[in-house]
Structure formats: C-alpha cells, structure tokens
Image 1 (cartoon, rainbow, N blue to C red):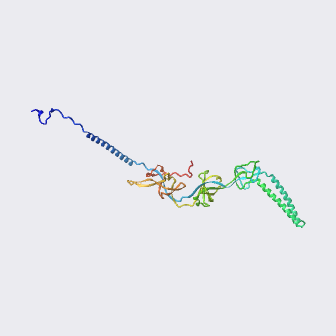
Image 2 (cartoon, rainbow, N blue to C red):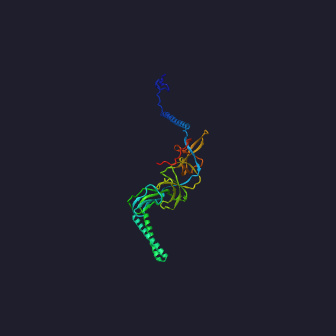
Image 3 (tube, rainbow, N blue to C red):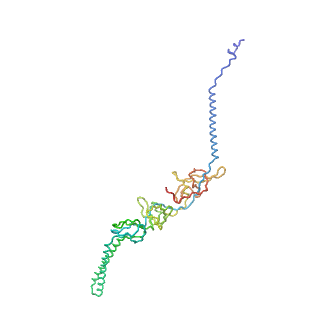
Length: 397
C-alpha cells in the first residue's frame, strides 16, 4: 500500500515539523499591565510606609517643652491716674524795669545772685530832682516858721486868723512838693519788687533807659505753677486739691508732687480742652520755669480689676492677646502644660501692669516672658529663673 494515498494523511513527508504560531498582542498587554500594577502598588505602599514611619518618629521624638516665666492674673485696685503734659511757670517772675526815663549812673547788683524785696538794683541820674527836693525843704522850713509865728500872734489876738490859714497853706504846699520830689527820686532808684534770684544783666552804666526797658529778670523759685490741659471728657473727674505728680527730663526717676489749685471755668472751643494749674513747692530750687513736664493727676480709686504684667501682653494688628497656661493629661496619665493664645481687651497701664477688661479671670496663669517663641497649644515648662524687672523709667530712643 502507498503511504501517499492513505486517507487523512497528507502528501508531505513525515519528518517535516509544523510551523510556530506568533504570540498574541493581548498577552503582551497583560504582562505589561501586571508589571505596572506591581510597580505602582509598590510605590503606594512605600509612600504609606514612609509616612507611617515619619509619623511614628515625630510621635516618639517630641521636642522638649519651652521654658517660660509665668505670672498670675490678680484682682487688685489699680491707681486711677490721669496723665497729661504741660510746662512750668514761676508764681513770681518779672523783668525788672524803670518807671521813668533816665541815664544809668550806678549798677548795684551782681547777676545770678539772690536778693530780698526792696534791694536797690540800678540808680538813674537824679541830680535835678535832688535840687528840687532841697528847694522844697527850704520852703517848708520858712513856711513852718511863718506858721508858728502866725499861730503865736493869733493866740494873743495880735494877728488875724487869715494869716494863720495862709501860712498853713504855704507849709502844706512845701510838704507836697517834698513828697512829690521824693517820689520822683524813688523812681530813679530801681529796687527788687520781691525776693528772688536775678538773671543776666541787660544794661550798662551810662546807658539811657526809657520807661519799661528790661534791666534784669527776677524769679522766685520757691514755688512754681504747672500748667497743663486735659480733654473735655476728663474734666468731670478733676477737683481742686487733688494730688499731682510731675516728672521732668532733667531729673529722670524723680517724682515731684503738688496740688491742683486752679481749674479754668471755660473749655476752649477750638480744642475742647480745659486748662488746669497745679502749685508745686520747690524747696531745692531745682525745677525751673519753662521746663516740659509730664503730669499725673491722682483720681479716686476704681473698683478692683484683673491685671497682668505688661510683658505678658502681645500687641498685634489683629488684637491684644496673652498665652494662658493650661494643664492636660495625656494617654499615659501624665500631666503636661501647654500655652494657649487667648485674645483679651486691655485697659490702662500703671506701674508695669496692664488692666485686663475682658478675657481673663483672677487666678489664671499667663506667660510673662518667652511668648515670642510660642505657638498656640505648644508645650511649656515653667522656668525657675526670676522674671526680669520692669525698669522704672523706660529707655528713650
């Protein structure tokens, strides 16, 4: 039998192999997709694992609490003070001048010395007046003799009463001339009107002075006036007799006291301020007229308010705030301290403390020093170091 003619057997030789089929494209897509899914999944898992490790690292490595100084909010009576600015003037101060015209013949004082009331200062030329005085004194002598003779004759009835009256009139005229001339002479001798300290001399011997020309300044430094103004809304709190404390730039750290002696009855229509005058004793004579002063009027006390140290308040454009120290317990049962920013409403500031109108209550602990490096909710620890002292006089820049 012939193999070629056998049923279902091809005519090709038996030793010939069948051709290979090509790999389908779908299989390639499946392989590539599987690889990409494994890669993306690995990246996602790696990022998740890294995040968990970072979170665990920071959870187990918390920074140490920030050391701060703490202070307690207190309920206390704050001095009710009204602050203003003003200037000092002397109670008695004048530029000494002559009442009449004349030439200076003698200067009887030394500049810068203290003189008593009535002390001669400057002599003007008075020779004509001295001559008139001698003339009137001579007339008065003659008139006195005539008057005495007329009175003797009239008492013996040897002369009329008219002669006595005429002699009396002549004597009175002579006395009036003497008084007038002596007054003119006294005007030529310039005297100190009151006790005080002389200033710089402004005249010289031989200089012709007209009436009113300043010769020297005279100031009584034993007592001064402090003139200052307050606003209309504060005028109702002022009363005569209230204590006034003054500070001047010439003596930093020192405080001078006086009393309110005058309150202007009118309020200025242009500024709506009222003028106030206080009298200040100056026994040391270190205060001078013209000094700029900061005045503080002590008003009646207000009810008790909440106060904190001035360094505890953080002043920003968004409002005033403080860091309140709170206690909280962790999952492990341990107690920790944290500082929470709390916005407050502040009032007046007196002697290094700030009045808290709203936002705190008595007994709250606040951060007094160290709040610049804090964020709300940050862990803190109370430092044992004493807080820095607030300077009595803040530095000037």
